[in-house]
Length: 204
Image 1: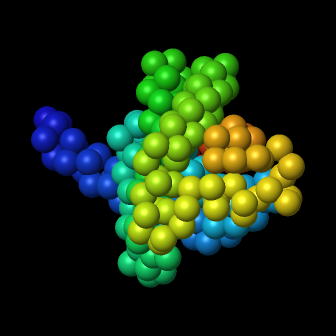
Image 2: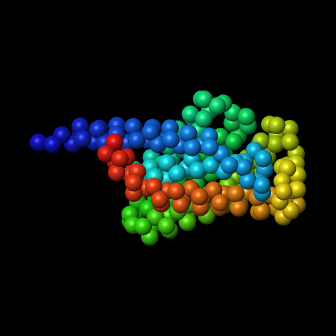
């Protein structure tokens, strides 16, 4: 007779192990960063949300969120912080805004079409949340802790991005395209690798 309690326990442990593995991969990818000319110099593009998206699609949105949290925990443990933990907080907020909605949508019907829809919604959600959180919370908090005026952030990219005139246009013409580009690159990699990776994740 099957022991359902034992089976569920094994599945729970397997999920945690897979989350841990994906978190480590996510942390490694976080260290491969690419600067972009239209964003502030402290913002680089990486694709570290890709393992979290795979986990969110294959194991559920909570698993994807835990991968994001673990990634930041490892980053803080091994690399410390240069932003008084403001950058780490922002990363959790923004990454979760991509990973969690996409995972919720995909869990309802696991088809390629649904995956595309989920990723598009995730990119839009991430871009909106990133812009609002940066405008009202992250940049003001970072500026206060580091002694930087908000308009100084715009001055960092004015020469490279002529569309940026002030703090508001920094959000519109720098933060928005930054997150859209990041989301698209991450989503493309997720679509390319998901079917190849998820069987190993589920087998654990």
